[in-house]
Length: 212
Image 1 (tube, rainbow, N blue to C red):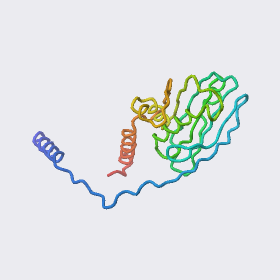
Image 2 (spheres, rainbow, N blue to C red):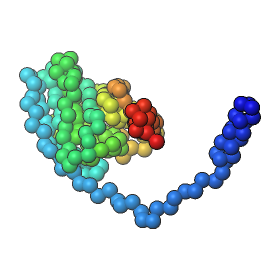
Image 3 (cartoon, rainbow, N blue to C red):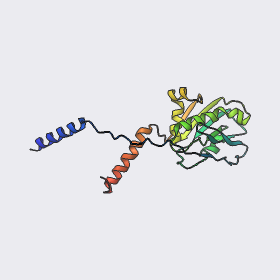
Image 4 (tube, rainbow, N blue to C red):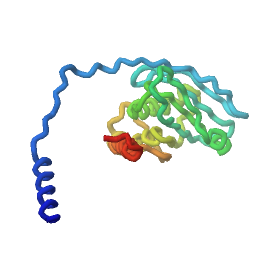
């Protein structure tokens, strides 16, 4: 009896899976994203012996704030720092890397962009970080770096990974040949990341007795 019921249930599930699904058609198109952001000029104080350059420059979606710091014993190499998710507020703020002092002590210069958009915009992260790296000689009056590296955390890890992917590196408007990339806790597949967040929330709700 159990086998018969199980077989019937499986057959019903198979048929329902093959049945054409009704796809809802939106009555009105989604409104275009018209958010505007404001680049906030950084006010970092240079660490001992270093020179700091900070301001605002054009980005892919508008202005982006930036900061660059070069140690007195600069080894000729530049590390670009890609910050993580910064919310969806209006202010674009540069975030200094946690390894700032350590990098400077080893002779590395670092640079960071606020990006020209908040929210989850990896394209802005890649393009604006690349643009800043390319502008290093102009903004600092120094020679072009012998090597440029990129490091990012969380969403910034996604930016760092995407910046060196073959397809992105070739199609980017602002191109940089990074010598190496270090994604830290990077969101390397945004589709599955957001699917996981949804699944995790659903499971938590069900375990709490709040789910469907």
